[in-house]
Length: 432
Figure 1 (cartoon, rainbow, N blue to C red):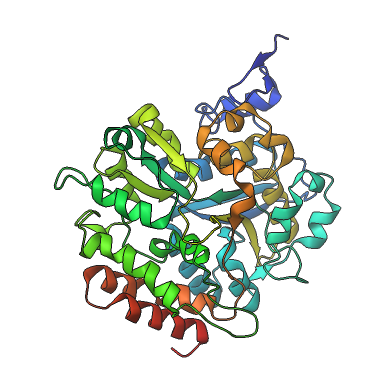
Figure 2 (tube, rainbow, N blue to C red):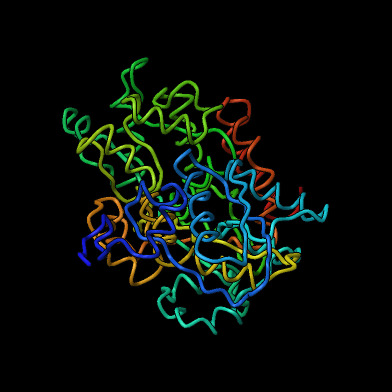
């Protein structure tokens, strides 16, 4: 049989696995050029499982649907039903409510910053025993697997597919026209945003006002200013002078310099994506999964650089994410078979290459599709700056759940930077 090379740099040909994809009408793989996998589940009875995931955009939603279709077509025992119609910050709330009502899914995608709360509330089923028995376990990057423990001494809590670094996108052509270099420091970033603004046609920075994700991109800058947020011994410094100074300058882009778009208070991911694609903003903090659309729209004009720093060190937040098993799942072995499938081979490539985020498996990371992406390469070049805040702190979820409306009030100018940070510190101390 003639062998060819697919877009992922992997040898391919029309095999039984591709025939399975063809039987799906091409739904799973026509857009990827990848081969379908064949599962050989240990479960040998008819089982139906529910799988939930959020969707950043229609492509992301299709990935969830296609991966389940691939799995369903690859074997005859386990059927996966998919719900991928929720936004990322809705996923946790929906799971908590459904779990309390006895109607939780069997498997759900999770992000690192949720898992300690899930464990503390009995929602998550740790996977370490199953993972260690899996003959492919050594292909996962050990440091990423250690992160899935959330806290030292705990078992692996979920099975990661990727760890997504967040950095600064910038319009290289506009910087060149203005005689500016990409910002190295936080003050240079603030100044560049002001210099590149030509309101109302374009703004220096695409600022987010909605959900807890709005301030997630500021975490590395606070960290570079020496802010620890919260420590195991109970110390909280989110209301320190250093933390407030970072916040004040950030809010100043919207309230003083007018270098952020006027709609910032109500803008979320989709709005910022559109602003960048349409050439309305010069800079944006996000991950490599935004790069395919931005490259398509802007070509070489869009580039990436590590996050600006306040002190001597840069920080780049990088959150592992992947499927987790819900403790109420009645068919745990079947759920594990599905989790292994979507973190392996071509199914894993759907979640990584098709979103353009780095995989956490050694063999997958070597494929050209990742090696040739300048944004992934840039972030991997600064792997030593990858970092996460103290998600395992006992009051982190309290902070994350309650802070969003205060951020919107701060962006509106209804509360000061100091008041915002002081309120956040109360949440982290468990005082509110």
